[in-house]
Amino acid sequence: MIINVSFVNVKNKKEAHMKLIPEKRFRTETLGMSPTGFWRLKKAGELPAPITIGRRNFYTHDSILEWLETKKKSSVQTIE
Image 1 (cartoon, rainbow, N blue to C red):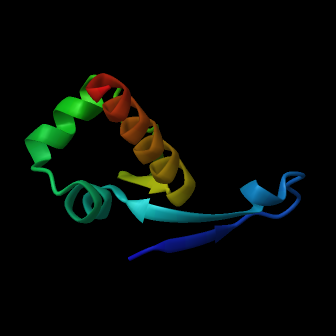
Image 2: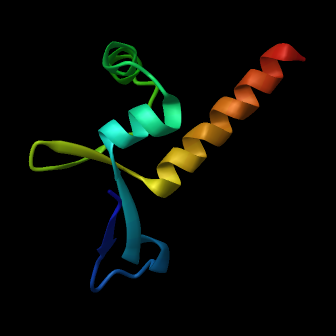
């Protein structure tokens, strides 16, 4: 499930429309991690900041892409 959120009266058009991805989907489909491993990364502050709605955590599509890019760049730098 992906939630499309639209905001009214937002100056920045990029912030006007966001795709929110539930934490479980991000953990399982994108990272393929166990709940414990994901919790450790989250606790260490190595994941993008989630958006909490009620008791559920969501991540924006853009924040996930940015986070994956930084991880890709840092892994390439350590190999070189």
